[in-house]
Image: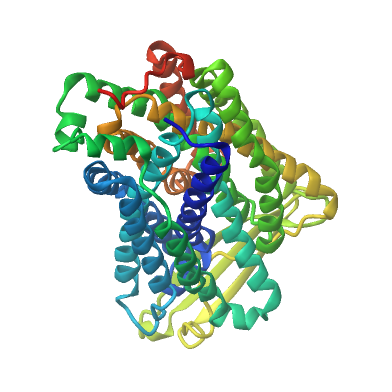
Length: 506
């Protein structure tokens, strides 16, 4: 059962607008991770504060499987439409409230409230994606299921693009002082307006025809969780979907987009506005390939495209990230690294007379080094006067590097489009209609929320561990993608529409 071409585009538009807004809400947190670490966490150690922010960001991913269970069950019991209308309200409300929380210096409970709202965001997104993908797939003709569902796949990257666009617009239309004081809150507060628009659109949507038919015939599941995970055959498909597809797809997605951004800003120390602008251009140029690979999967199958994307990522990540890192080593005398040593010499007679020596050894692109030692007494060590933390000079790349950086990020996102474009159709086709929302949501959100969502945090943590280098963090996504590639190659079927049976008459 499917709609006319006009009808299917109404379905896709209504589903995609809401899903894009939810992705915007979810990723605005990651796009503003640096300033969030400064505003909502203790400022004594910026590295610790940034890692705490990434951990809070990751917490939203970790709870996504629980959202998949809760809202997936609702979706299979009461319907697709009302369930992902509820997730939209929860997501939008949580994002808006993040923009209202006072800073840590005025409100020490801020980190805990941020974590709570981030968890609500994760729960909401856990119920959103499965509903939107299922809703579109159940309207689409079988021979174009990959093509039509791939439009939903564009919303994740477009949500990230919109978040960057909003941030850059606010940065460029306000002074640095105004942005640092209150302007950074506007992307969060704007969410409430976007959500209201999407609610109006979704209220006009009809229920999925396949689910509506099942419901009218009294064939809906009475216990979606038990049927999804209590039956051996279905549980086998859930595990295969996780370890043979979504696990690898998740790490490729978050390495190619979020970790790449974190790497450029924190490891390469590139200037944020310039970097985010170029990343945004690359995202926009690569987005049509979600649709291309979704369309291609209807012709040659889902498996071959997804696994080839993982294979390319495994072998290309290190050369690409090396090339990005080397761009910060421009021929001008720009600082690449700073090694800081703190020595505290105590006075035997009076500890208040202790002296602290801060030695900074800067290494430059021409391999010269410059050592500078600063002396601080207890009086000059007041928090308002000096912070003994590592500071690096931001690197602004010459415009001649624009095309190269955009091209490298574009290639990373191209890998993302290969693994992500066909996966909605792939997951929908694995499971029967009456438990589809629940069954497909769990492996998707474990693969993306846990394995993928932890990429920025784990990779950054590995990178700052003593004895590691700037490429060390890549071993996490490379190893996960490699395991998934092997399992997928051995056990996945190269599905396309010819071997999919519509089960509405079960």
